[in-house]
Image (cartoon, rainbow, N blue to C red):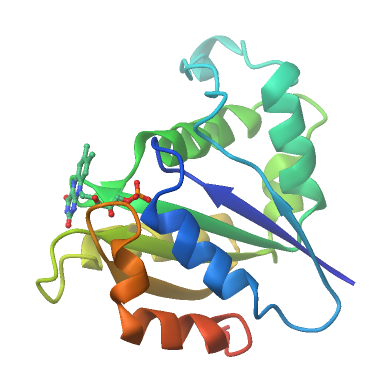
Length: 183
Ligand SMILES: Cc1cc2nc3c(=O)[nH]c(=O)nc-3n(C[C@H](O)[C@H](O)[C@H](O)COP(=O)(O)O)c2cc1C
């Protein structure tokens, strides 16, 4: 069995990113067990950088749930709208917390993340080719820096909720996305 963790980041309910992620998740490989963890609702607590003073403690509450789901997963799928050429805030907030978890005594977060696989699903309004590149590059680098593999990126275009369901190319790619990993 392979554990898949889907991490939707949109700040609105019923949006395009969730629709594209669900379309891809309908075609998970055999033996997959999926868990969904909405990073936006309820919101994660705001990260504060306490590294220099050794102040990072074991996560509690919603962060503990996220840490548990993250560490149990083999495959992590960040599903984010593109905001200002990058990740939506809730996704960024999660990655910031990863930086804190590196410092938590006994958590061994960095070691436990190595070898897991990271995937990206994004939707944006700007259909210009390359508008998705900064976000994809950031997550490829994130995976590399973490010692994770990068499974691939699936990008759709849409603005109003539901628009992405008209992106027939993205929907076609969604059907084979998880069964044709890059690494
Ligand atoms: C704060 C904000 C920033 C955005 N920045 C971009 C952007 O840089 N490039 C782009 O193509 N679309 C941008 N958009 C449009 C969204 O990516 C688009 O509406 C997307 O479909 C939203 O996905 P969702 O329905 O899953 O929330 C932005 C939207 C918001 C609210």
